[in-house]
Image (cartoon, rainbow, N blue to C red):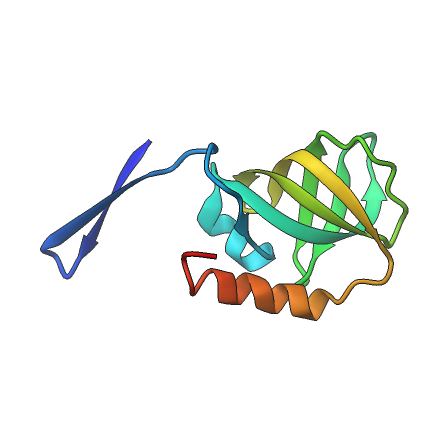
Length: 121
């Protein structure tokens, strides 16, 4: 899908939205800006609903993770997720990694905000 952004009603900036590029660091708030694109986030697992993980993002949003959940994840553990944003609250996972229960969510949340202000990260 090709999108055009109008800047000052004169310039047009075009870019492709696809799921083939490197993943973007996102928290729950930023996820909605990257639907259809590859993302990277961390959630704290709340429950497993038959292969679908429900977790809380580092900024407090509830997210649903489905797909390649090839690692057993314990309740309340933090899990890193690489995948494609399906909606503003859902990710189709490609890779998941259990980070355990000792993870600084506030620092990761700050990284997400910073990485989206500095586009080369």
